[in-house]
Amino acid sequence: MAKQIIHTDEAPAAIGTYSQAVRHGDTVYISGQIPLDPKTMEMVNDSIESEIHQVFRNLTAVAVAAGGSLADVAKLNIYLTDLAHFPSVNEIMAKYMPEPYPARAAIGVSSLPKGARVEADAVLVLG
Image (cartoon, rainbow, N blue to C red; front, side, top):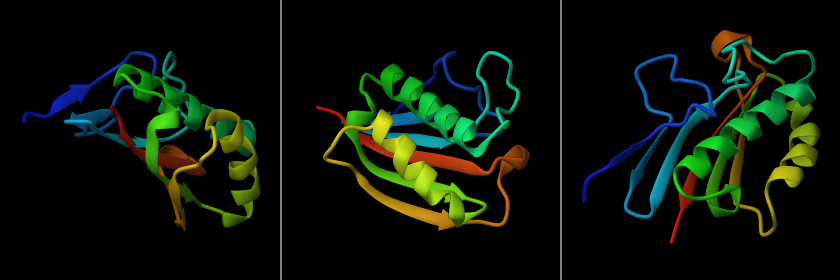
């Protein structure tokens, strides 16, 4: 079974040697999304909450382009430069993802691309 590259102009263009997502069968692997505005390719960074919302909007756009939604996420990884922001992630995530929630990891990191404070990647299972 061949892999299918997923791309949408509704999410930020790749800023490196990767695809926004790759679908293989019913599984979609979404690359890490940082709070880049897809129209301007500028960082949204006026607050941590605005960054988190932008990350989830970007994930949503890629999931839709792959033929799914955030309801199809089986595994979500969240990367934060400050784990004190985790309560904000929980609050905002609940606005974008329905229960039952996916499996998830929260990873504290020292830095993220373009000075982002949050990044997320996901694995969707469609079907």
